[in-house]
Length: 124
Picture 1 (tube, rainbow, N blue to C red):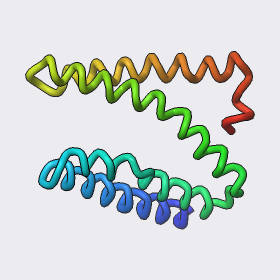
Picture 2 (picture 1 turned 90 degrees about the horizontal axis):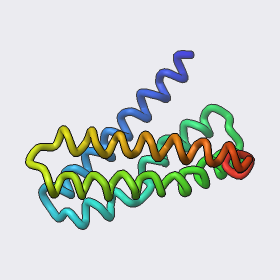
Picture 3 (picture 1 turned 90 degrees about the vertical axis):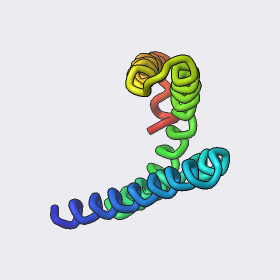
């Protein structure tokens, strides 16, 4: 168990460093560069490393990354909505809440569509 906690802390630190670098680049260098750096699946690296450390085989990890690829549809929807809401409102809280709600509804639809069409074997 302590090994698992250590690995989670390691993931947390790597993930935090990744988010910090994206925030810095997007804020102080160039928003496009920040977005491009964010598009590289750096946040997946600690996750798949953690899976490997916990003895998940490469087939399992490959299916996880494939699932992530299809879940990018949800990311696209939520980012487009967030951009739309931010451009029309002065604050950030309501656009975030609205886009998070749309993400949640879209995620539920996505999940049950996969289940209903019996595609889960293609994902995990």
